[in-house]
Image 1: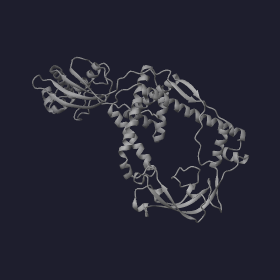
Image 2 (image 1 turned 90 degrees about the vertical axis):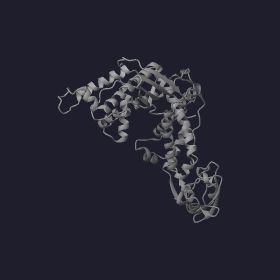
Image 3 (image 1 turned 180 degrees about the vertical axis):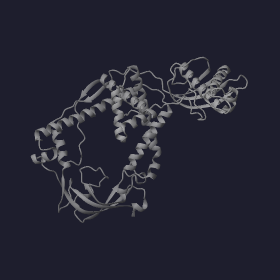
Image 4 (image 1 turned 45 degrees about the vertical axis):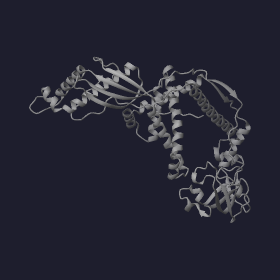
Amino acid sequence: MSFSVCQNRQTVYHARPSGPDAVPHRPVVGMENTSPPNLFLMNINVEHQPNCRAVAHVRVPSDQVGKERDEIITYFAGMVRMPGYRPGKTPKSIVAKRYENEVKDELEKKLISEGLRQAVKSEGLELLNVLAVNDKMYHDTDKSFSFTIEMSLAPKFELPEYTGIPVKLPRIEVTDADVDHDLLHLRENQATYEDVDRVAAVCDVVVLSVTGSLDGQPIAEAMPDAPSHLKEMNENWFLLADEDDFLPGFYAGLVGIAKDDERTLNITLADDFNFEALRGKTIALAVKCHGVKNKAVPELTEEFIKKIAGEEMSLETLRDEVRDAIRRRREQARDAAKSNQVIAHLFEKVEFELPQEVVNREAQRRTNEIAQRAMQQGIGEEELIKQQDEILNSATNQARQNVKVSFILEQIAKKEALEVPGQKIAMALAQIAERQKTPAKKFMAEAQKNGLIDNVRSDLLLQEAMEFLKSKAIVEETEPEAEHCDTHSK
């Protein structure tokens, strides 16, 4: 099981919508104030719903409505300029009539903000987002004001034991054979391909033109949306490996071919082939060979070593550097395996509902990533549409895993009072600015406005929690694992 942490999971909610620009906005006491005056007791009933949603039904008594309206009118009277009156001396009755809509708008903002604050405080809610404010109504009977607030909440759950999580990790060993294998890859990266006048064998390169057909009709005509490599290829190079990583039987069918030879390969596509319309079908690939090339791998001579690593490099030093690189690579793989095992352990130990809005955003992000990768692999838009349900299901399942993991890590960070050093936040922001090629001063100004700094801090805090868990895990070492080898290597 593989996990990734959901980034920027929480969204910043706005306790009060933006108001009119006709007059200066009066400061509104809301969630941003940690200790606002609590002069009135509102009638609040919070209804909890599935998927971490809640609806607060709020009713504000008439005396509070009247007091807040009078304060707003007084504020407006002191700020507006009206013909015939000195600044600040306009009668409140005239201001109330002239700015009736603005006063009403500011009043509702204030009452809704205070209602939200009291609902969150009285119920001990951890608010993620205000989804909507509905059912606003002034009651003629008692002059009260009522409304409902739809909210998305952070889930509540009990953390399982999270220190001493057992993990099994392979012992890291680097043998001479491992070093030889990586040196072979270095040599292969410098390989040359020489034309040979003989038939092709395994590990040779053949240069081919290929045209595909299905039931005697060119695939390009029968299925225009099919992957381009099934329709036609012109003078493409293919390294004939021991195992097929292109199409089943394709490499084996080319062994023995010579320059100017033509042959037809009948290839049966797998039942899970990425283009659905051709799954399980047998296609005919008409092949013409333009040449056979031998892959010549250079020997590990002193001259070769200096060419790839510099004049000061010796065989002994090169082997030491390769050995260190292998060790670092395996340490990184071991660390990733440790992360996955720790998270998998916690994932299985606790169950709780998730905020659907957060899951939906993460699922959309993953859907976009899957679609982009598929298009890069040559899958057409029409085929993507056919697979959209499968893609969405996969993205949603992974999104639920990622969001759940993020909430677990966040709670661990809170319980352990973990913090992110300011230097680490600054470094992360600098890296983002550099990637976006934005001047640091301009980037920081925008980051403060759009909430990016808080998002980066939240993401880094989850990483701190993960590092804490890994530092407390109990490791059982197992035998070293063999790395996957490149089947093209000789």
